Image: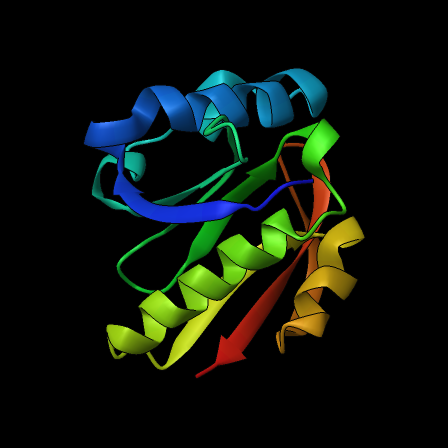
Length: 141
């Protein structure tokens, strides 16, 4: 894969590009109902978009004001190539610059190793969100 570019953005500016990643990943592939994936928090969140060398959106995520990171999605054909890591590193840099002490997230169980490699640790019991098993994780900055 050619170089990946990650940019910070807003829902107002880039909701079409954000949806171009989240709909195929969450709504179509994982069968998350549209109204669960897209919520009232999108408008006030900081978002990131990852673009491939042709400036096509291939990944996205968001962070709420309290440090809750989520909605990480990478298009199927771009996975296992470092896209998610680049998005996460941009989010960690952002949180640190904003003075946040902690980033927390709800990881799908298949993603635990990914987040552990970035320094997150899991806590609590497994729970269901959108009919998928998740676990709470956090990173202390």
